[in-house]
Length: 536
Image (spheres, rainbow, N blue to C red):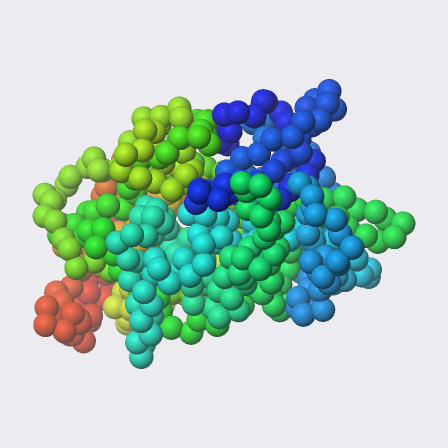
């Protein structure tokens, strides 16, 4: 977790107050009321770009784990009937005025099923915006700038897909475009009309409700929430049982989010490069902090050429419909086959960073947060990569008697220091796994998606000794070794876990239309039959 340099250790956030900036400055800060471990209060502020780190009743610069409070999951019908304190004219202006929403919600269990009671919810407006939008310093900064998204992203709606051009001046971290989940959530903000309108209402309300005092512009945070119909909130706070009231301190996740994006989303940037050999290109630009605790300096500028990615506590998102996204690049660079992951981010994280707008003259590295985790079920988006493999398996099963047939798709793991779990289009690299019993043997067939690589890895056919051990531990070990050995099969472990294992070369593909002929598919299935009959 990142630290903020001018704030002492283990300071508890009691209030999150108004934003302010000097008239001649473009950077906003936010007031904080803190309390130390001896309950002694103090007030301070930090840059608004650090918004992701600010959760009421949490601790800044903690040296230990602190309880988060009462965990409550609740479901709303929409936000249309929410009451907003912005409309309360009796609220006095002040340094620590916090606007909130008041509404009723249905308490739900871990499966999303309603429970008996209706809860009265008090939700700080800042917390809803923080958890929905502010997962990077860029988005926090941009939210207060009118038309910032239009300035940084040019959106073209084509018949079958959206093309989002990332414009040269955009400072959104390039490395984040390698994460399909982060691309999905950015697409949602950019393309869903209600969500974008909610994001842009932040800057509009800043202009409308902000006021001048001496040399400062001051504003108590508020915005128009999106409808969020039927969304489940996973939250922490204070529950008052006698009145069924819940005061939200933190929203840790959203479930059952519906988007209005029905087409694939393609991101393009001049900064994207693609390796001719199917290697990584710029896939992980930026330095990762690897669990270290960098210190954020509010009074320093970050260097645009030196970006450090900081792990922070993420907000979890689960969409009802998986938005399909990918990167595209017109640039390419040649690399030799077999090159190791030498262009991965450095592990030499610098101790001091800045979340201010990065500039070329910055004195310390810029910091960006990994502040969101997408948990949407999206494996079906990658099934088409295995259409020929599925056809071959279907042919085999028609000609042979198999039992307990199963087809699964897995994402290869993200292992620190390696990049091959991500394809050049920025999507996960998947493995198709077929398992069945044949002639009394437990057979597993593995097919890795190497559609972006000129040197594909052959299909692997295993006669396993212990299917339970495969499901519990061995599969994960094999997938990890595939990544650490740069898309090569780990022969040593196969000798240990299987009685026999074989490679099955892929059929020839028509280079003109990138298809496999029926005769080639039949030869492929026949070769597998020969292998399995020899193995059993």
